[in-house]
Image (tube, helix red, strand yellow):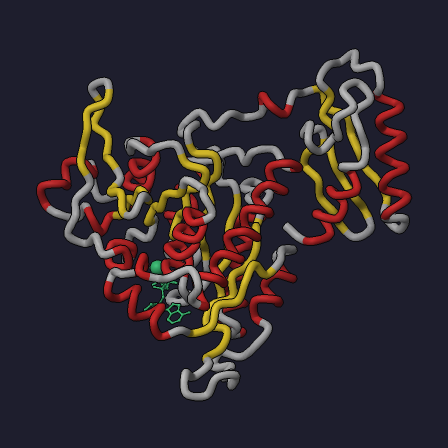
Length: 364
Ligand SMILES: Nc1ncnc2c1ncn2[C@@H]1O[C@H](COP(=O)(O)OP(=O)(O)OP(=O)(O)O)[C@@H](O)[C@H]1O
Ligand SMILES: [Mg+2]
């Protein structure tokens, strides 16, 4: 989601639906907005076939775009459909937004970003959950200090459901809390896809504004199962500034942008951006180079949500399971608060102009 889309949406908010006198963005009448070269494409959702102000509305929209973006061509189509009846999230209607945290390369900080982003969102007042989709190397239990806890299993209408472990108000599911022999029966087999599905379909999730999903690196079975199972709201890409990390991240992001998948990239978190020694404040060492986050944002038509320096206490707290010990006035919680705010804005923008993502139908 890039800044230009935001600018277009801001201007379209000036256009009112003549019937209700409410702006057309608030009414979610503008859907599937996208920009290519010098063209702006979108659908205009109409509440009914006999909507009487079709021509007037089209005229106002065209004038608005021509006035503010004269070098762009408008391609708008009417669709008779209520956006409020769009593809309801029937699997987990209690979860408003599913956010995947993704990278190309391993070890760039996805799990650290997932955990700290979840904490920052919670501190902003959002109900937030965490799902560890890294079945190969689940690290959330260690980071959250819950490696010895086991999720409970409850009976709902005769069906067994996992109950996420709640840590400081954040419900968490991770294979790292389950891989004990006596729990194997709950997993019903070792297959990755089955486990991922179980984490969504057979887990008792509470009402959440955000479910943050920590992915393994790259584009494998987990990513594929994810897009087939839930309507992913968007993806947060994590990279270090390093060229190899960026190249791999572009490949991973491309999977989500494929026509059959179409999950928007909300933005980029550049991690390990620099190191500033405590005994030499102000002196920055760009250990992994510079501008990688911006390059990734450019290639994925998104923006940099934030840059996180290498901070020793961040690593120490992740290793010792004391991530919640961070104080809001420390450097990195402040950076994460900014990232969480920016991400929330992108999600709101995404939800106001794009239809909910459709889970991909598996090829038979
Ligand atoms: N900004 C940072 N400052 C210091 N240490 C960091 C920072 N970000 C991450 N780390 C540390 O780097 C290591 C790798 O981070 P993390 O496990 O979050 O990466 P990942 O992308 O999830 O890895 P994997 O691909 O294996 O899942 C961890 O030990 C973590 O504590
Ligand atoms: Mg990880």
